[in-house]
Amino acid sequence: MSFADYIRKVKEMLRQVHAGKPDAEQIVAGNAPFELQPSGDFQKGSGKLYRRGVLLAHGLSDSPYHMRHLGEFFQRNGFRAMAVLLPGHGTQPGDLLDARWEDWAETVAYGVQCLAGEVDEVYLAGFSAGAALSLSQAGKDERVKGLFMFSPALAIASRARRSHLHRLYSWLLPRSAWLSVMPDQDRYKYESFCLNAVTQMWRLTQALPQGELNIPVFVAASADDATVSSIAALGFLSRVKHPLRKMLWYAAADPQQADVEWVKSALPDKRILSSAHTAVVMSPDDAHYGETGEYANCLHYFAQDDEHYSACLASQTAWLGEVTPNNLKYGLLRRLMYNPHYAEMETAMQNFIERLP
Image 1 (cartoon, rainbow, N blue to C red):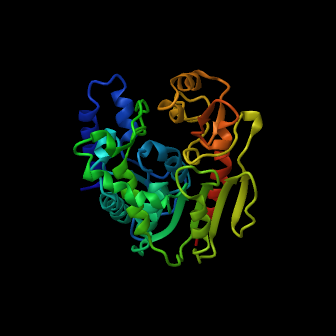
Image 2 (spheres, rainbow, N blue to C red):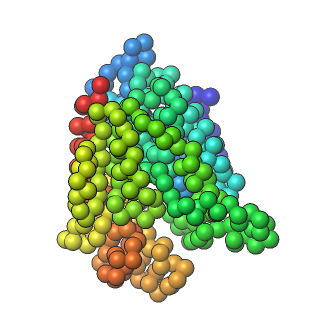
Image 3 (cartoon, rainbow, N blue to C red):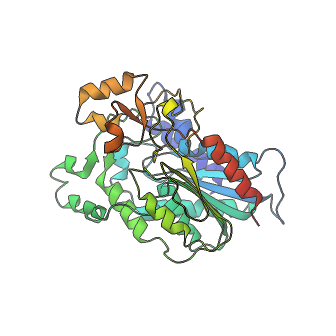
């Protein structure tokens, strides 16, 4: 089906799932796939409407809402943009219990097929699991001319390979199928997390291409990432053989690596201790996750300490950063949900785009 029909069908499904909720339309709008036509000056393709297009893929347990700011950035820079909703997302956390990473990959492949019908040059932009799926697609699809990767999930803990064993007994003890059960109060991201999602992510990382890559690559990652291995992103950059490669590295110290630009992540005047996995793609101006946004991530306190969880939600002076033992020593900590350097990241991406062949 056309991408426009795909969007309509997914929206219909989301409306059915979230019917009766007071904020149903906001939920549908944020979780639905979207498409954007390039604004301002853009280059026409050779026999196609556009020269360049980008497919955006969100992360595990997230939604297309997390790719909206990036989509609008690419739109302003002359790209035709499409964003997909990965199967099992946007509805309820339990829909990830039977998800397969191959289904996510097929959705990305479908998006590329739609995009390639309109543009000469296909680019992929992915956040976390979406970055891994983008790399997977690029490894087998010559139509992909470049990658933009944010907090890429290229490696996770080896113990994740055993996460599928819960299936041996979770039919009898349903709670054992879940890594964590949370309030799930976020409109645009699951807070609860099932073990099958971990299993599928591990399988995805094992299927990623391991050889050299000869296309332009832009990466933004946090050294303090508590969700994925950020060191794997540094290692991946060394396998990119195309001369146009660039990484923004949010960290406390300069890694002193070629093609890596250090961005000092701690901003004490803003009570920010470090960057976080969840922060890289989100603008401080975002109404939901931004600097004055309505959502506060205090989930690390939920299961252990109701008093701290409530205090964290209500606090106006909590520290911000990744949930690490060192950061928790400072007192009440919220997981950082926005990138205070987002404008600078867009500038770096724009410079990168200007150098594309």
